[in-house]
Length: 178
Length: 199
Image (cartoon, rainbow over all chains, first blue to last red; front, side, top):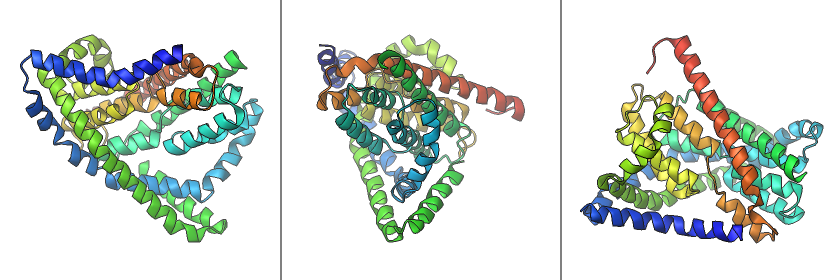
């Protein structure tokens, strides 16, 4: 029931926003087509400018992950998770989360398939990816688009936010569902 | 920071690949990742073009003013360096609204537009302004209220209650956002105290 409702909301959001925008603009006498085209023409340049930053970052991340360096990192952290009684299978998600959105989604799908979405692990995994963000990708994209390479404390803050999200997700799920 | 990080990723990747006997895979890994990066950028062209068009209509029609007046108190607390009527503010608010509604692919164009406008206010063009850092803190802490992708994944794998994780997700998202904003404020105050005047 709830899931049905949310599904309706997520299906309707974008069409509704476009509808309201055009309807309101029309009342206000805005020439919608001319204005749309005027705004839209900046889209291409903005997207193309991102290529060097994305290539650099994705190559680095991909090398780190596929060479096996990532696994070494994960194995080093496993005892810490063990100590707090957190299922170790969650670890790859926690480590990969800031780095690679697509592989985290793949790992989560695997956990949901193998352990079941309603297992404790499935619930922790689901909560974790819903409440955190692919920090490296976001930073590369946003700072890259304006050519900024001195990013002050942005990376530290982003990683701390991910860490807080991950710990809270594990804690809340173990309290509620554990 | 980003320079050291990239250096570490590349060097460790190559070294470990060598130790693991995967050195022959390195070129393939590099070029397929590069190709993936370009296709992400190309994929963004269509989304950017469309949503920047819609955004222009939202601005020109004055619809944005309604959004701004609702969110003004929050926005002026978070972004003290941006005047309320500056175009950067409208892009920031559009980005935040899209994020909260779970419209991930609309949030990105608004976010990039916000960066461009904030860069106009920035004195040091190669260095992030404090307001940019706050904006990124919000975006990396993920303020999504409806994690649509996760819910879809859960129902696809046969969950008896796909949406039961919304409650925990909102709690976790809230905590991570509070943590992000607090640390951002801390760094902002600390650095302006240490470094004297800075924009």
